[in-house]
Structures are given as C-alpha cells and as structure tokens.
Length: 219
Image (cartoon, rainbow, N blue to C red; front, top):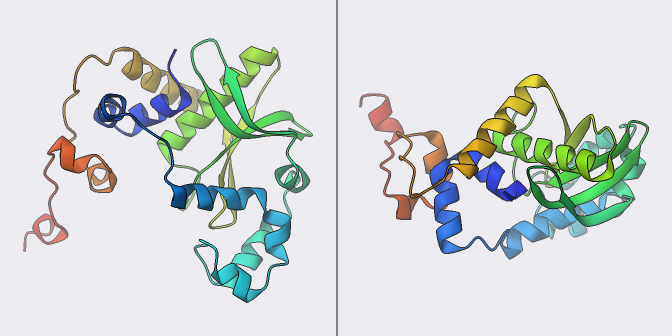
C-alpha cells in the first residue's frame, strides 16, 4: 500500500519517487528533524529569550518569530497545537498509510497534522504537502469511521500553520499522485528544466539539465 511520503513525492515528481525507492529514503536529516521539533515547543518558544531563539533553527529574528507565534496563538486550535491528543501516529486508510506528527481534538473533530521543516508559500501549502495532508485526512477518516474535513500543515521555523481542506481539487491531486505511485515501473521521464529540479536532492543522479537565470533571460 502506498505511503503518505510516496504520494507526496509522486506529486512533486514521479522520478523523485523512483530514486527514493531505489536508493532508500531515510526520512528527514537531523537538521530537518530539529526544525520539526519546534512544532512541539510553541508555548516555550513564545517566552524564550533572544539568546535562546538565536540558537534555534528559526527563519526570522527573535522578535519577528515571537510575533509570528503570537499571531498563531490567535487560532481557535492553538491549545490543541500545543497539546495534541497524540503524536507520531500511524494511520492506515483504504488506499494509503503512513505517520502523522500530531492528532488534534478540535471543535471540528480530530484533525491530523504534518510538520514541514521548510518554508511555506505565500498562500496555502505546496502541492506535495497538500497531497500528503489529504492522504492523512482520508486515512484517519477511513480508519476511525469519522468525518475529517481538513488537515493541517505546520511550518514551525516560520511560526505558520496552514489549513488543507478536502476540496474537489485537492482530492483530485491526491488521486493523480496515487495513480502515479501505483503505475511506477522503472524510471519515469525527466521533467523539462523545472524549478522543482533545481530544488530536488536527486538532481545529480537524475541527470536533468537546468538552465541558469542568465540563459532563461537570453543573456
């Protein structure tokens, strides 16, 4: 059965999933795990000194980071984010399985969360993370026979939490990724000079050529 990680990788690039399967994907490296750990320390971080925050892998100055957490504390689910019902929970759905970082009991019911060590987009979440969040929400709904209207993606280095609702478009992206995982048989075609290639950790093994900004501008 496909995992949450696999459908997320397939949404990013099916060829990335091929290399991850072939070479073995050990999950986040120690630095990224340290970033993810911040999502379990929100209360303490709001009261941390400048010196303490400078020693942490946050993306902003201490003052700006505390301000971000203050905005985050205005959310209705703030208490649940700080004190989740369960952590590191393995879920098995009808089509997909994997771990979520937190389960939150909220006014809308039980909500799964995924903690990203990276940077959020200006709005919403990145498509691979949306697919992963939908996979988690659907698995939770199937396993516990309950409605799960949305999931969350946390970006703790920025003090940002984004909601992923199970819209028609989001579920369609999940189904496309699921089909890509199931149909994977050998290396898929390379992407053509995509920005995703430049950010991919497998780009050297893949052999895709990416153009420089100078060449893109015709200089």
